[in-house]
Every structure is written in C-alpha cells, then in structure tokens.
Image 1 (cartoon, rainbow, N blue to C red):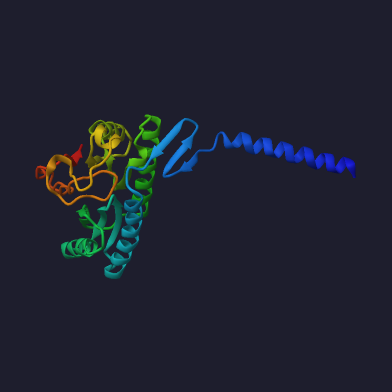
Image 2 (spheres, helix red, strand yellow):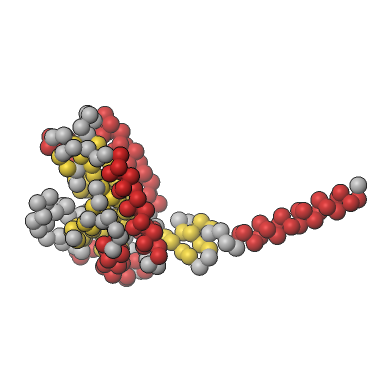
Length: 250
C-alpha cells in the first residue's frame, strides 16, 4: 500500500514538472496578444471592430445566400468594418445587387467589390487559392513580419488581396514578400496606412488620418474611408486621400 502511494506521488510530481515545462513553451493569450517564446502579436483593431467583422461576415454570407442563384459564388471578408467581395457571378446585375445587400449591413464602412462576371471557380481553383494563402502567411512569418496579426490575406484565382492596418514600411514588406510567392499573379493592397506615432501614441477621439474630415473610426486608430478598387481593365484608380492605399502591384 505504501509503495502504491509513493508511486502515485512520484507520478504527480513528474506530471507537474512536465506541465510547468510545457507552460514555458506555449504562448499565453492576454488581451488580444499572444505572449510566449519571445513572440507578441497584437490585433490593431479594437475588440468592438473584431466582433463587428465577425458579425458582418456572418450576416453578409446570409444575405448573399438569400439572393444567390446557380451562377453566384461570392465570399465576404471584413477587416476593420471594411468589406471585400470576391468570387464570380453570371451577370453584372447580380454583382451590383450583392454589393447593395452588403452595404445595408450595420457597421459596414465601405465595400470593395472585386467580384467578376464569368464562369465560377473550379474545385482546383479554390484549392490552389487556399494553398497560395497558406504560403503567403507562412512566408510572412519566415520573413519575421511583425504585423502578421494586422494583415488579412485573401486569394482569388491567384490574385492576393492584403487587408490590414499597417505602416507604409510594413505594407511594402508584406507586398514584396507576397510577390515572391509562387502562384501569385497579382497583389492588390487594401491597407489602411498609419504612422508609427498613431500606433504607439494615444488616439484622439474623432480625429482622422490626414485631416480629411471623414467619419471617425471606432477601431484602434482613426482612419479615412477606403478608395475604390482599380478598374478591371488595369487603368489607374482615383487618387486616394488620407493615406489609404488600394492599388494593384503586378
């Protein structure tokens, strides 16, 4: 009996030591930041914006489903309450209707409609896009890109969209890394540009980047509206004020 108790005590001691050892290796999530193994990743969106983005995507998918037909395949992605629509439809009227439905969702600041009119993606196309997205994310990590949690990567038929809240330097780094990934045909930057001072210093309520007078954002940094996506024919996009970048990089 005494031997059994001693063995149990030894097992519990070893187990506690293993848990303590593992605790030193597993990142700890505190207040939206992963802390551990020398790594800290903070989402630059406010907690309210993150919740809104999740809600927008769920409601957006529901609204698209309600109007969908056999030729409509649209994905809804939201970052800091700005929405990207990707996919295909059978007619221009469907493309416009989808955009109008998404604009009606509460808390949507703007919509970038990258949906194309034409045949839908194949299973192989979608699998390839998923693979490219994973490679881009992995490449950003390998490049020690510190703003990984502030960039969302979306791929549609080889075109990679970079959404996020980043500095110009961070955006340029993410763009260069993405362009070097095999299978990427074009990079479209949909980034809200902020300065180091905006990221590190206190934010004044109701202010906007560049003094554009745009409605204040309730995210972690105040930002102007996003510029429209460049036309599909490759012509230049309208000039964007306030430091917001929405541009293709071939």
